[in-house]
Amino acid sequence: MKARFYKPALAVLAAALFCASSQMQSLLNVDRKEFGFTFMAPLENAPPVLAFTTVALGGFRGLISNILWIRANELQEEDRYFEMVQLSDWITKLTPHFASVWTHQAWNMAYNISVKSKDHEERWLWVKRGLDLLQEGLKYNPGEVNIYKELSWFFRHKIGQNLDDAHMLYKLHWAQEMQDVLGGHPDFAALINPKSPAERENARKLREVYHMDPAFIEQVDKTYGPLDWRLPDAHALYWAELGVRNGTTQEKDLIRRQAYAIMQQACLRGGSLPPWVKTVTKDNFILWPNLDLIPNVNQAYEHTRLEFTNQPQLILTPQKNFLKEAVVLSYEYNRIKDANYWFNYLKQNFTNAFTPLEAGQTASDYALDQIEADINDTDPNKVTRLVLGLISQEYLCLIADQDDQAEKFNRDARAVWAHYVKLIPPLLDAKGNVDPNSQRIQLDAFDKLTRYELDDILPRLSQVSSNILVGKLHYAPPPAQPSTNSPPSASRPLSSSAARAGRQT
Image (cartoon, rainbow, N blue to C red):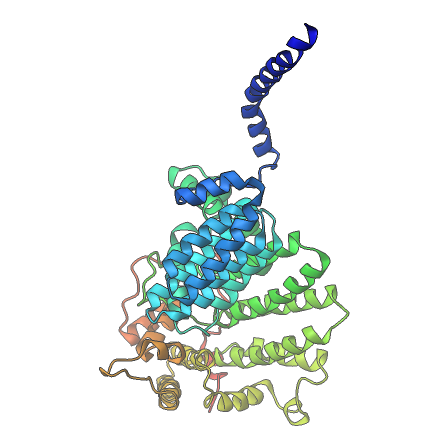
């Protein structure tokens, strides 16, 4: 009799225990989520067969991911990109805690797929999708150094440099996106401790959409800036610094060595818009040097060299080359005192910085020789800086009532601009229009360069000097010009004697 009821009793006990344990499942799910034990996100909008297979195979989701990855590569080869994007989304949902899944898919979209489109707006959509994918990956992999490195690289290389024909469009769209969130130089107090609904929304968007910490943004800006946070270089620095904070010693070494390269890029063309511009458009967006960053770039080199002493030449050579360019740029923008300082700094700290002939020159003579060589250069960034420097000299001469000298600088600027256009003429398509793919190496229109060099210099002038310059150029400045967050550069002379200290070519 006992044996007769033994097995049914066990079955009843098992059923009771199963029902009791099921009541605990919801609490267990909450704890699993809180302590990060749940690695698999639910798969949404998947076809029924894929959803059923995923549930049925459970722990074999990685196998399904591999099959989908193979299929995604096949779709890419067949140029079926939108179907491939859906598969990529499922792959990241199936294996969300593998950083390489996010970085690979993002790289594929931003680099491999984007360049296959001839339409620059469509290219930007793919690049932006790659950025969004990396930032989404941070939700599942907070503190993942590989994602930080990729984000820094995207901003520094894909968007920041000029290797892609559509690079200026990328920069423009990112500046437009960041204008509303951060502006040129953020109000950090409002982002860290928002009070109004608009401030709270900006802070929420910054944290939840872009996964950026306003307090850390402020720290990066104090260390390297002030930076223009509408430009990609500032964001490249932000993600690089997060990588340094969270990485291993080897990873920190690699990322730290990128910081000075990003800073150099920001210095050579890190001034984009006057601070009072609130709406970024194609017509008012232009890049020019931010020479106030030269000391910060040099400090970044020095800091890196002190941290990593095993291969000092990897730091010394690019540092030397940057400072030599800084001498020329300072001279072009009539920062004679700065040009002399960095010229002497090079001679004192770098024994091989100059040839014996160059070492015996003055900073002005050295800069003039380099400028003559730059006139025949085919780098649009370098030639743009030269033209802007000449225009700046023209404005200073106008203020000092040296109109003849100002006219000469204007002629020189136009001559350099026209010489480059002759060397690198724009390519025309079959209809006679400028080929969009040739715009990557073209200069902006001369009138645009003069207008925005003027917008850059006006906030630095006294009211008297500003009135003189505006009157002579018959220029109507913007109606409202709030003060900048950084003080005017003391090395931009405005007096007649300082203007005469400029180049006499």
